[in-house]
Length: 236
Ligand SMILES: Cc1cc2nc3c(=O)[nH]c(=O)nc-3n(C[C@H](O)[C@H](O)[C@H](O)COP(=O)(O)O)c2cc1C
Image (tube, rainbow, N blue to C red; front, side, top):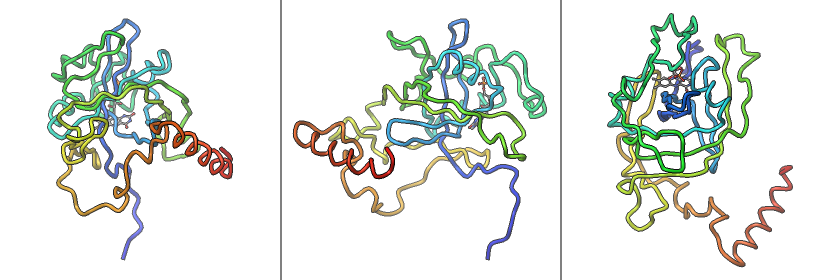
């Protein structure tokens, strides 16, 4: 039996991502988010419109998504209830948010910058995704339960950096799920994964089937033709 309930939040369990964005003065703001999902090399994130991260993305259009692992829960906690915005909106004041001038210092995370980039990565995060904003839409505007202004932001991932110790030993382009332990936000509490449950039918065939652009020569040509024909049916 199930009963009808009215939860205040629907945080069913999603990975914690620390988003690095560029402040106006050239420093980097970092913030934990958990409204994030991926399809291919594109990503959707959900952001409070009043956040410093949103302001920075609107102005600069770039970010780095640093994926947190279970061992980083303490440092992520240090970032909670902080904002890079000097002016704190009422809803955040009520929740006890404070302004932070430098969240790297306040959290204990280590900034690391690639020579070609202007935004600092978080060195402790073993997966770091460079991304650009593709689209930004107001979110849940007609939902009377949405108490604050929010955006759904589509990002295109431009580069993936990963720590060698979480990769498959025989394929450096693949993350080994047995070595990667994402930090999960589950109804505002922090969890890590336990162990693999059973053999996943979805994972039986090669992961490379998801990446036709990796094929070469005639196989690539043929795959592209077949996909083009098939996608047309669905209006793409
Ligand atoms: C674990 C965790 C997950 C969060 N998830 C989100 C989220 O998905 N979207 C969002 O807008 N804020 C989320 N927040 C709250 C932001 O971190 C908060 O709005 C913060 O002030 C943003 O920082 P900024 O104003 O410097 O950008 C989350 C906070 C924590 C601790």
